[in-house]
Image 1 (cartoon, rainbow, N blue to C red):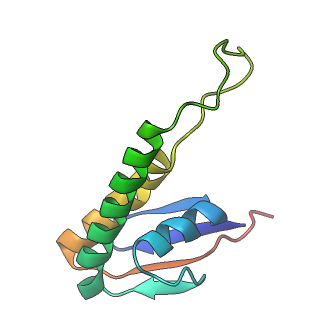
Image 2: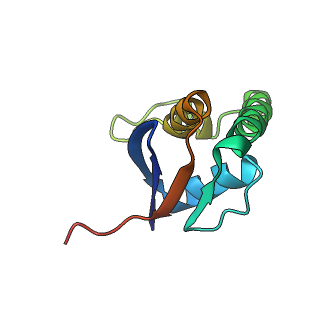
Length: 111
């Protein structure tokens, strides 16, 4: 499943469903798809998300890498949750500045 986020303050973004739901829960939302966040709730949700991501990042730094010492040329580097969260953080930040609501839904297939 893919989840698309919409706001009048930013371009729509699409994320993998499991990542989107994880980030929504980190922000204090239930993770329900489809759903919405009112403009008044976005600053606190954004603060919670960034706080949880910072804590997750600190935990990750303390762990040893599961990747072998010898890099496989065919294996791309892992993309962390903080990196995956960046587009959503941008959207939420813009929505907070412009006092716009944010909605999300399961992405429709292109066919």
